[in-house]
Image 1: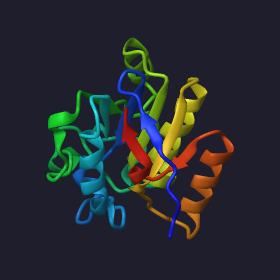
Image 2 (image 1 turned 45 degrees about the vertical axis):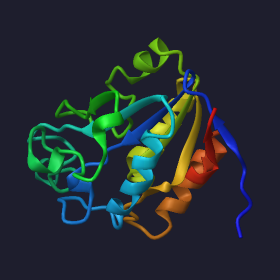
Image 3 (image 1 turned 135 degrees about the vertical axis):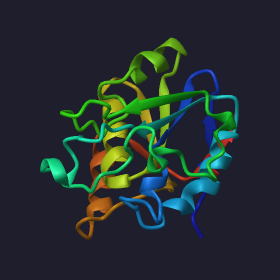
Image 4 (image 1 turned 135 degrees about the horizontal axis):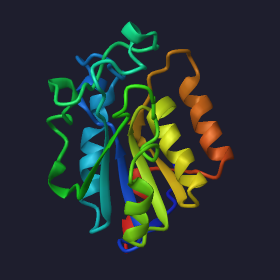
Length: 197
């Protein structure tokens, strides 16, 4: 049985970042993350945990985005702006999400991180945020990039490990991603350890 470590969430200085919980990244989508939809109940519990700042990022690609295979990129077309695949998972409770941040909106810039080319840094700072908790899809790409960028922007950062899933293009990619985040000062926590102040 796993021992619990209580982590107090401070609504005035902590924020939750839900990364790319979109239809195209869930089973049946154009770039489905295995079991991606299974995190939805955990995420819904997290967004309602306290009155903290809640942010949802989303891929919002132009139709000719550089990451698409038609343009020589590694991925099938996905999360094209205003398409059905770009909308958030229908089970995701958006009522408690206070801000939506669109990323990878320019065709020549990949932008896995929620910080890259967006106002996420200034948004967090304007609310007095000092620590971010990151969850969503996918562990080995946009979750990792967002968490590492949070550290580069001098935020404390934690990834909620039962509220993420990975692509695993190569076996072990998720474990490698978690190790890289840990080595760069990102805490790895469980949602059940979080308690509102």
